[in-house]
Length: 76
View 1 (cartoon, one colour):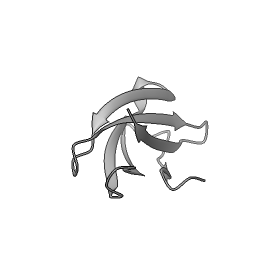
View 2 (cartoon, rainbow, N blue to C red):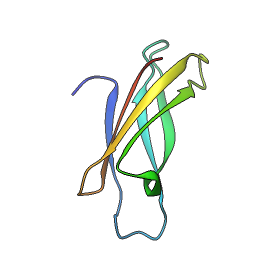
View 3 (cartoon, helix red, strand yellow):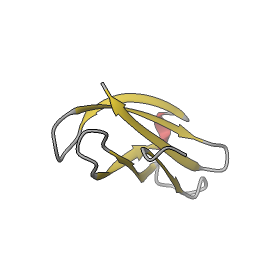
View 4 (cartoon, rainbow, N blue to C red):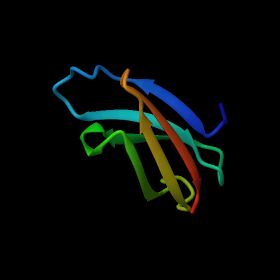
């Protein structure tokens, strides 16, 4: 597992479609907490600025069938 990838579990039967996960910013090294909308699908890619150093990061989100979220952040 790369240092930029973090796993978080959520209850797939939960009525809430939101869950939080983390990644490590490649620019500043800070661990960043991001909210995930699991209703947007099990594979998501989007750009979000790091809230610490403001560098744009491409976030790759995969949610496996067991409800475990994997997030990887890479420079845009």
